[in-house]
Length: 415
Image (cartoon, rainbow, N blue to C red; front, side, top):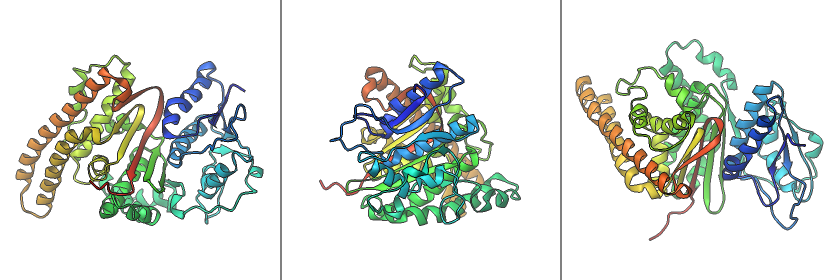
């Protein structure tokens, strides 16, 4: 059937790259052919499979798929059909999904011993059995964070101001993140000294997903012999709409100041919606740099500068991929970010007064804006020269929400 899209096809496993490049487009094609269509998913395409090939689902693609499936469930108001198969080719995949709590999350589960079921996918449980008895680490389970957890929505409703709500949620999710991911972070030689920072940042990003993006946040962290990888995905309002909602709690941030500056000399021939997606990535990094607490920008710098890893940020129709190829620009930005945090800390410990804070931050904000603009201009120029190796990827299909993927080598490279 034309409305069935397979996660795995002949010669192609499900990875974040294949998800963005092919899978999303296939889903979009179903609706472009007929807007009244209802897409259905299939675990694996049974035609032309090579029985000597080991097919797999990259664990960090699961939060992406869950976000998409939840969007479609919300759109159709009923769970999306998910066709399973239990064969020698698929049994390892099925067992991993089962033991990672994937089926508990996407189903109707209301057993408090397991993650609360979101009723996202409609599948036949008869296929879940006959497994080989392979166990997975408890840290490798997919997680769903939501305001319905532990009555969080009812607990924050009496809190009047937004910063206090945020502080409450960050503290709550810090405990959860530490419980779920501390071991994997600490075991990685590149991350162990930054474990506390990563926990703080991940709690901040999850709070962003459930509070400001008005969504659930799906998270998975996975470690093998070579890398530690994690993915955070929500199907909320996206970066641009989230920025539109920002108030003036940070007096040094003028909403869309950088976006409008970059827009005047934007060199790429793309639609307005794609242009907005691209520029909102840089506006978000700029905003994150000016905050008095660690967040998205700090995660990017820790991953790339301190851990020699890869960082990907996607919203709507665009993605930025940050790696050591941008090390010089990142180090300059990180130095400015360090100055900003030191300035806030100086005020916190009464080493400077409010007027001195304001004076210093005005200078640093202008410096920060200039450096992010230079980074953006460099990336746009390289995209124009060769799109294949650019740090920006552009997609015709809009994937709603904010999606972050990180890959970090497990061992420190010895020179």
